[in-house]
Length: 572
Image (cartoon, rainbow, N blue to C red; front, side):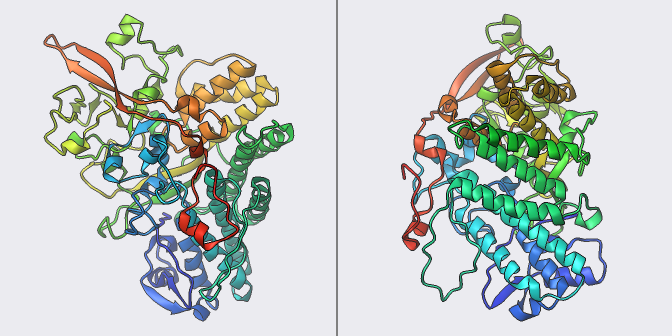
């Protein structure tokens, strides 16, 4: 199984390489070369004479595949900020920057520092690591160095061609992340050295960046295989490159970046999404339990994912990424209770009949967690839920509530909920390392992209077909509609289907509606009455404000100071 370790490669006269990985490769071990931490230095010249070392070099740059990093800019860890990239693998952390979640550990300086975004206090010197400017450009430099040297490598020409295509994909992935967070950025294809003194690189327009990225992705698409197996599972495929292209074009076509509503941009995005669908490589996965979409590895829906194994090595040395059961499980089970869902999204999960949940309905208000659609139960740990041999007790005084917790009260939810998505009930939350899969792109996202694009293009019948395929798989009734009514239903479906997958913050931005949804984070107080009934009272767990500047991330002030041509984003 393909494993990725988050390690920062610095290209100087010496290059950190995975010598042990090469040894294992030569011995035909079944563990992937993308699995291991670099522990030896070899000369630069040696790398480009040995195809096995080149494979290790490429493996290092797969570490750039993440959504965000967590922790403050302390320099501790392996990916510029905080504790590696676990939250970068699982995008639920960004939900704390939107109307999905509240990260109670942000107050201690952990995680993505969403407080800075939702309170409008982000600045060029006090910023969330969401943007990853330095991290992305560090990987881009490493990838550019590969392109400078791959021509001198001798060996299997087919393998060299595939590795080159993988690096085009990885460079595109890094630039897509930069563009989504900063807008137009400098397009760097040269490799700066320590002797360079002039770093004057101006920002390209967003359209020019999109054109450049598409060039890389088209090269990747031409050179990548449709599938892998065995230890290569998780490498970039043709479908992954096509899906990243589709996502980029949707971002470019959306209202934030397409103020004139240029229909040619929507058509290009729609064509790209349909091309992924028409590959025939992927299909919606229909497990017996909806939550297994995120637990059953390499299932038919997965387009791009990382896969992690448990390890005997200490978690804080190698495995920052496979602690999902610990990080999300309720504190009473030994979990850390991170990125806890807020009432804002809990109320948006429909009833089993497809109707909207209503607090004004006395039956529903008395039992708010009954008769909800299947995705509610796959996403949310709620009070009274039966889990691992007992009920989750979040009511005041319960063992999963701060007031009644015996195990780690500081990890007990204050919103009234814990995040269920990604948690494997068959694994012990107290064990910090487990096998797990982190999905970056799956087919349902592409279906929702296509439905949105077809709606904009006026093809509501096609949009409904793909929207209702998602709902049918989820086990809820189909919807009807057209025009803006259907647009809103597609956006709602995206909110629920892709909940806690790192999409919501970026969706609200690209739709230009972030202000509309930047309300306070609401939680739930639950009181257990003497007769066993419960009383539910909403509360504010975090006051939030909207500041227009958070539409884009700030470029770090250190980068502005080094580059006279680098123009800061508005408001910073």
